[in-house]
Image (cartoon, rainbow, N blue to C red; front, side):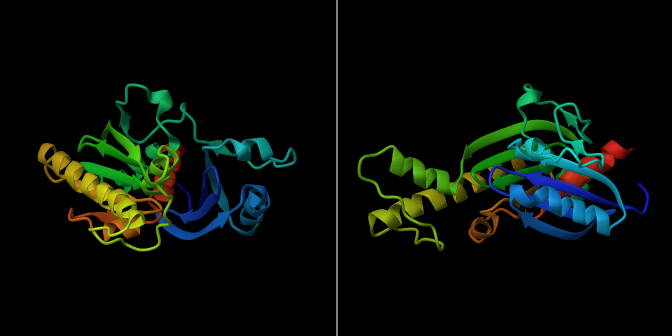
Length: 244
């Protein structure tokens, strides 16, 4: 790629994260609301020498809101965009853009190494990349807040506690028991599955990201690499591969 900078965009259902890269360096990132995105993007393009823009639009809102007057060429991450790894997923069309980007990010930080990428957000996703840079699949389970909400919604009397700090292992109230079960259940899941993957893939690197990554990392026994902006680096890796 040239010396020009690149912009990558991760547009979820509630907010948009936009990042400016210069080669492999993340220079700046910003959180936005959907309605403010296009004006902010135009300002970034106007103030920097931009080479390419890649948008991952999970919600579809950005494409719908794109102003007719916006003329700068945009790359949209879709099922047709080539990926820097070999995708062995059986239902490729159902593989989320966020999972693709996280796998690409693992390649960025650990090229030619087996990697397990864990995204602890609304759901907890596990994605495996082998040393031959082949994506094999993984698993999906409910995230921390989804577990708490499910227990509240699907029972007659269980409350919906607010997660504010790491709970005690032994809950001494119903709220405390719910928090302990949800939190330590995910910790046990991560430790157990990471161990199972490590037994099958020697030298496995475990990466953790997502909204709950920091609070979960405090109790996880497995050696992990925690990175707040992992998904953004993955989008940049996909964009760089596309440019080549």
